[in-house]
Length: 387
Image (tube, one colour):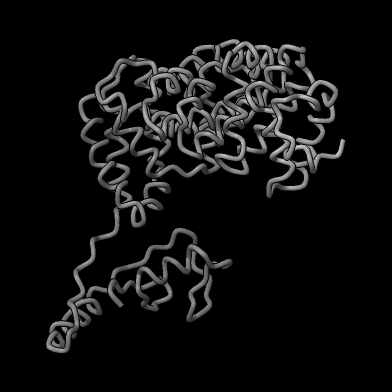
């Protein structure tokens, strides 16, 4: 034992071991007595046993035994409640946030205590007050605390659904001209992604133009890789509800996505870009915007078989949507000229899943009369393609 604690049943355990038991066991019981432990029952430090352990370590130091350090005292709920009350006082809330941030960084020990005391709820309400009063002081610390201790509990979900202005609050933070803007906006994007995942999906149906505008600013300014990933994940989630696809397309998102992908970002960003493009190309407006970009088809063709199986799947899906629903002669010839048809032939012969080969074969069959005799396709690529 390093940090002996006594349960309400009188049995002493090592803190790390009993806390792991209480967190993972189906029934919250004392492992020795099998008695049910009351919800929220405290573990009392056994100082006498700890001193005996430390004395034994000291006496056996000559044998290579390291002394067990005195553990930190458990986080007091009274202390947390005092800090939460200070968040409501204009002259004290910044100092209280700084203290909470220090506690939040020791996440394994303090997360449960902070969650039970309602720290996340208090910080969300503080950010809403900052938004209503247009004050940015303390915003960075508040966002950092939320990112560290975030747990989408029932209480937090109910709070977010009751205060749907919190999404507007985070959008406002993204638009503020604020010191340390890269860090703050990255934290705001991370928090926004967590909020979007926790709220009632119907709250995304009426997405405001300012929201999409801020997501595109993050993509265009390339604030940070983490912020870009969060923005793409949020837009993918938003695509699933209401008329959001149309709103996202109208904000010139497809152009920005293609420009972002032309810079050859890292793999997981490319996968998100292609996922979002596939969603947007499933509507007529999206397909029209996609083919308007001079490099769109060439970019998709070039990335097939070069990034990951996930990207290949979405890329073939995009080409399928374009060839079935926006296939003018000019576009079909462009697919031939920039190598998209060649890549589809290569997908059929590569080590790809059967469903993906069938999808590629379906696109080729659809326009075989125009493409089959083209000098742009090497003969060996057609040898295994059954017309």
